Amino acid sequence: MRRRGEKEKAAARKRKPPRERKVAREAGAPAAPPANAATRAGAGGGLGVENIEVGRMLGAVADLLEIQDANPFRVRAYRNAVRTIEGLTRPLVKMVAAAEDLTELPGIGGEMAHHITEIVTTGRLSVLDEILKKVPASLIELTLLDGLGPKRTRKLWEALGITTIDALERALDAGRVEELEGFGEKTAARIRQSIADHRRHVGRFRLVDADQFVRPLLEYMREVRGIEEMEVAGSYRRRRETVGDI
Image: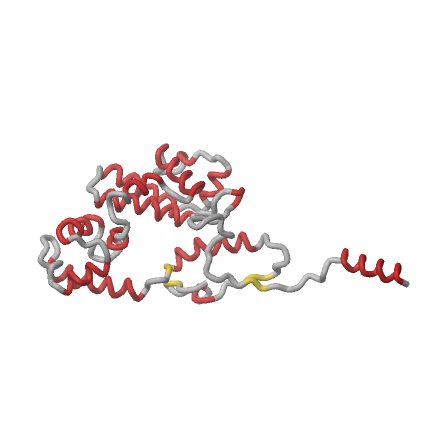
């Protein structure tokens, strides 16, 4: 009887449990499992940096170079690369993993291809790190405000020492911004409204940006054994203009 009982237990251990229906609801992290603090593991063992993140880093370089009053042709090269990346339908991480020639993409030269490869494989961009030693990173956020841009941001920084949105708001309250050449009352009012809009949408993403994070996440999750059905919940599912949760 003991032998028979032991055989039954052993057979039970070998049998696979019945496949349970699982519904995966994505919550927050828009990529595969983390590889380190800055990037996430992606296809082919590389880093899961999405196209939108590559574009943002190159766009940040363009903005900061313009704030530095750099060569406009160099600035334009970065902006052209960003436009190309925004129009891609394939993940750059897969193109790099496959050793594809990125210079075949429109607006991507040898230097830009090197930058893209560096971002995808390391999650960093050395040229951006070098610029940030000279220019405050917070200026990038200022350039996003309606009524500003790189050139006016540089003027606020050089003339009033403004590097953050809070400092800009204090300068607006004191009437110092509208006194600057090239600004005036209308521009100051426009900037003030833009600050209010910015604060209402802090922590939210444009739907088109959220799409670029959700799609590769779904592709990754579909490869997980045991998942039969997935449903994206939150404001993303409602297809609102901006997304606060996924």
